[in-house]
Length: 355
Ligand SMILES: NC(=O)c1ccc[n+]([C@@H]2O[C@H](COP(=O)([O-])OP(=O)(O)OC[C@H]3O[C@@H](n4cnc5c(N)ncnc54)[C@H](O)[C@@H]3O)[C@@H](O)[C@H]2O)c1
Image (cartoon, rainbow, N blue to C red):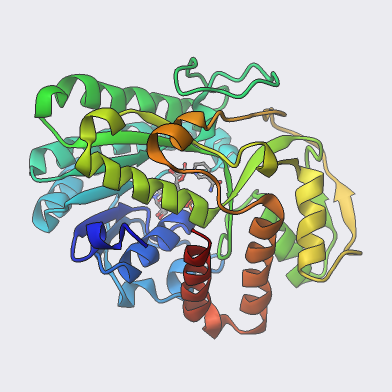
């Protein structure tokens, strides 16, 4: 792919490499020839871990550092001297944010500030991509898609913390780092991400897979909630393209960017469940309706016209193929965990063929 040359031999820091999206991004960058260093907490030991399954620590550098620890973050970044930083580390779950609001604020807001401060102090960083979420918008539950210029908000601690991270990023970008005083930096707002190897709690696909493995009924909340679903590689490509643009044309790219699937990827929970069960060969698996205990948005649409017209990024995988790719990963993982490293590389290469 054309951006192979940008990242070949480049020094790339990925925060959150022990998580779902960070592991895919790190491995893809590694396949492009980048020297990748991951910075994150160790993977949780109470569930499978993509980081362990693909033996990522054998392929890239890996440091277990808490992003709330400003000194360790600064030392790691200064010693590594990255050309690019992808900041994905976060407390990324809405439910967990209700249980641990302070930790969520600390990690997602101050953790982001620590990364940005260290990136600026280190010098030599060409581009920082700061990953937030589509949930940063003040959600009116209306049918119109949100644009990057719309009002930020967030009803739950996770969404609020990510909206606050956007504000922190904007202060660095537009003020502290104005006129070339720091790296070029953009924030990336994406939707609900699916893909193999996500084992997070309270996410639809991992919940489905756990129930299939346990042969227990799948309990779903909010079956009619519409979300923008995207395969993890769609988002990784968006982050990579954004970093490349920041490095070559920082002025225009230093901004906030939406990356969603467009209308073709919007579907309610019920629809995604049925495609997932069909894809993994279990269309009759029992499903029960659980109580929707926490307030969650029912409708959230992203306007992706800016990414299309100004960056040349448009979705390459529709909902059906994204869900099929995802369930294929889990099906093969269930059959043989040892196939995970090759499986990831194969899915990355197949995805590259679409572009
Ligand atoms: N998965 C999605 O559907 C989705 C959607 C929109 C945005 N996002 C955002 O994308 C990013 C990655 O999400 P994910 O799904 O891979 O999450 P994940 O929970 O799988 O991974 C989170 C990563 O952050 C690290 N982390 C958490 N707290 C940390 C701390 N205090 N110090 C250092 N590292 C810490 C974890 O160790 C892990 O590597 C997050 O910023 C998330 O908010 C995810």
